[in-house]
Length: 265
Image (tube, rainbow, N blue to C red; front, side, top):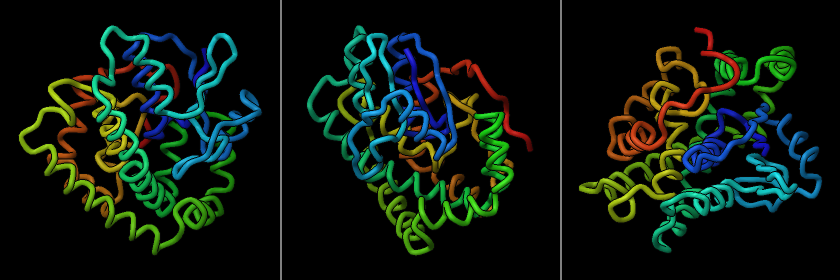
């Protein structure tokens, strides 16, 4: 079984986490953005379906042993849940929240983190080299100024889109913090796919380290540039941020990462 990923992506962590919870054995093939599309086309030429967050050739892609392909993180979580002793979808509200989180919070935290990464190209390069050492990172290093400029324009949408996403993330963190006040989980009294999706959607703005449960290497918090570091510190202290970090600590576990190494400082 093969899982094609962008290793540091929160959408990809969502799939990885569910497969690990279910005890599913798989090989992970990790790539950098751009290179990942080519890999998906190679393994699944037909592609999947596009949505607000993804193109037809976005990751994650799970290629099953029978050759069938799952092309969406939520579909992979659902597939993994069906192989667990206790379902991650005990009530319909779980899937509804998962869909809502995918389309709003996760979309805008991704834009925010890429905005900061393209503004700090060396941070992007350290992140890449820790997760995909080799030719893809060498290619990024050789074209870093151009990639940073074009990426900020194409993937982030420029300053106006970046600032709008910052405002939406602030609103969403406040909204979910209010929802979580007095609750241990988003739905009911147990960990569900909603909590898994929420923790992953929050990942770009709370930066859980591998030692805190994240399934890949992120840059150490003390190496993050001042502006995003300040925001991360604030988000980690909100009820939403604390919930995300607790989900990683209590329900993800420390995964043995079979590639790369800690980012250079």
